[in-house]
Image 1: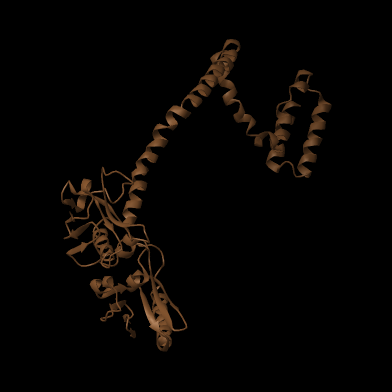
Image 2: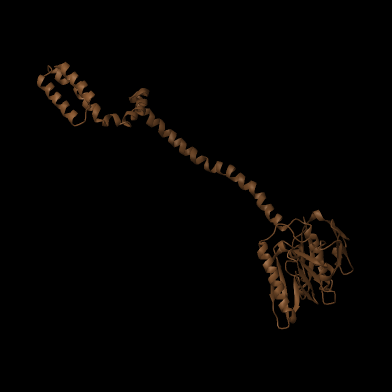
Length: 365
C-alpha cells in the first residue's frame, strides 16, 4: 500500500483503488470538503503524473473518458483548487510522490487497464440530496426532480413564472459553465422544446453564476444529475443504431428503381435479338436441324477412337470395297497379307488381330 499525506489532502493506493481524502483545514476548497472522500477504482484510471516544482509539486490523476460524471458535467472547467484529482505536494515529499506514481503506474501495467473511453460511469457521483444557492436562485435535486427557486435578484420576466420543477425524465442534458472575469456563468438544464441559445438571465431552466464562493457547488449538483442520465456513449450509439434500419432499407428500396430499368432494358434488347438469331435456322433447317448442332459436338469432343491406330489398321482389310468391286485382284490381296505381316512384326497388331485380318483376306481370295 502506498500513501502520501499533505495539508491539501491524503491519497492512498491499495492496488485496487485510490482513496482521495480532502484536507480538514481551511486550505481545502468548499467543493472538495462537500464531496468528501472519493474512491477511484483502478479501472477508471488512464494515467498518473507528478510535476516537480521549486517549492511545490503536483500529483495529477487522468481518468478515462466517461468514467466520472463530475468531469463530464464540468467539461474540464473546474479551477485547480476545486479539482479533486490534483494534489499539491511540498518539496520535502517529492520522493514519496514519485514512489506513489511508480506504484500506480506499475499496477496499471500489471492489470492491463486500457486508456480508451468507457461505456458506463465507474464513479457514483456526489451524494444526495443537494441544494445550492447561486446568483439569481437556488437549485436542488433529490434524485427524481430538479427544483429551481428564484430570489430578489432574478429578472422579473423570469421570476414571473414562479418556481420551476423539472422531472429527471424530462431533462436531456446538463450544462455547467463557471463565471470568468465579467462574464457570468450558468447552470442550465436542457429540456425538450426549450429555445436554444437563450441567455441564462431570461432562461427559466437555468441559474446564473456570478462568481460567489459557493458557486462551485453547482458543479456537484450538475454531476449528480448527469450521473442519473443515460451515459454519453449510449447517446452517441443511439443515432448510429437508428440509422442502421435506414441504411439496411436503402439497398432494398433504392437499387430496385435505379438499377431495375437497366437490366430490364438490356434484357429486352437481348430478347429482341435472340428471336432473330433463332428464327433464321428454324426457317432454313427446322426445329430438328436446330437441335442437331447441340448433339453434334459430342462426337467431336471425343477424338479418342479416331486417334487410335489399331482400329484403323484392322478396319482397312475388313472394309475394302474397292478391290472387291474390281474383281478382288489377287495381287492386291497378297500385298495386304504382306502389310499385315509387317504390322505384326512392328508390334502394331497382336497375334489375335493378325489372325483375324489374315482369315478375312484369305476368304476373299
